[in-house]
Image 1 (cartoon, helix red, strand yellow):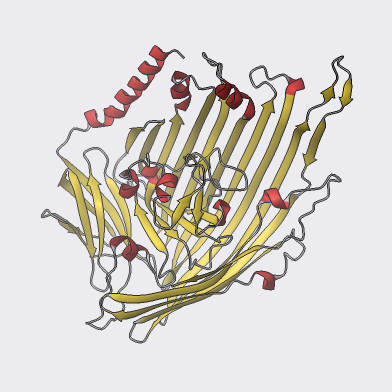
Image 2 (tube, rainbow, N blue to C red):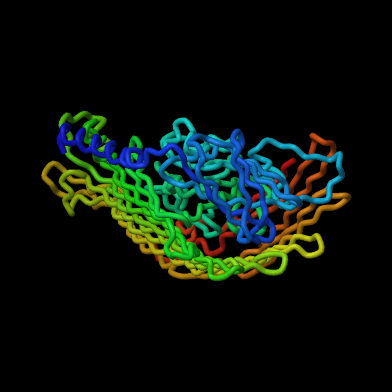
Length: 571
């Protein structure tokens, strides 16, 4: 692609991204959503919805739903209140002419506090902290992600700007390092379903990559816990990220096109049935980095697609069925360059061709119970990694092949958890079952053959040929957590434990090896002072790249490996 054509291409994308603005030049917009009880997930009626700064308010109906129309276009603070519940304020809610903002809010019941005891925190912590996670919790809203300077709508990059969160040594990557832990010690959940792959061109056995996959238009908020993890989360040693997605707008079909410095993304949402009980969100994103790198005459050509979807169906008043899907196709290749330099030549021949694809798909059912709810999730995720490298990456002669790496990780997961409030006690318990599969085939030239001046071979090439015999194995675990407020609700106590096992490692079936107790305490000292503390032990199974390693005799050598262990003390 020549320079003139590339400029026309980018100019065309800018015009496309302006179509929604040109087509929806209105003076007012609308805002809708649903309000639920945080503990029981029951819809709340007669909740007051107030836009700060204008005389515009409404109440939720019997299904917990509300809609404000004819709202002047600007940014608002949304105040949500109901007798018996803690009021909540959502900041920087944008009302636009084109798309109707649809939000879901969980209100927490108020305890019978003494009149003089009022707990006040900053807005981010106040929305995120719970009796189970009283500290080391932060939350980002979608508007905070979009407005983050330098974030480029990349959720993974914005996360690195949070207090206590660091990145890797290479600034262009989305490696998340918390309190010195490894990037693979973090776990990520999208609407309660684990997503092991979060970035394009992800490093296998880790979680980092140069570009995040999640579409910010889907996200309602992100909750980050860097300690005092809920017992229902396994394999977490440094942090737990909970990404909460929006539901599709039940009132109308709408969408947007977003053009950034590196990519073009399109999002569509709306109802799938006239009764508004089924909604969808869908998006596709395409990078055009290869165009920019061509203009800069760089030899590398990174290229990616990603796709994301969510479908929600209200089966009845007590049961909701949801489907989520997330996937990506990544290709890292090379092209001829106009002006060769030693630096460009080094990049050309020292970097492998990379072809990756991954997906996560899952079904989840939420069933309301007496004073609580049940979650059941069935999901499957797969990550395929294919790398090739030649002595001369431009010619790509089969005789010059120096690296051929083909590996795939696949997991099938069943999770369930029950959450209830019984006589003032908050009880959560459940379990997990996973079938994991790992394959790896590697050919690598460690040292090339040595020849004399006449072409006679003096020493043959040294190569490594490896095929992992790991195959399939099971992982399973169970947990329980109990929480209660005591002493006129001044003291909050949460106690929990879980255990994890597997059918592969030598001691994997011993539940006592991974008993991970945890305790969180929160005490209101004065109106403006609260003392929080937690202690917990957490376990993680080693990555598949370690578990599947075999010696020259093709015998697995890490079957005796123990779970990784970390103990947190935070106050």
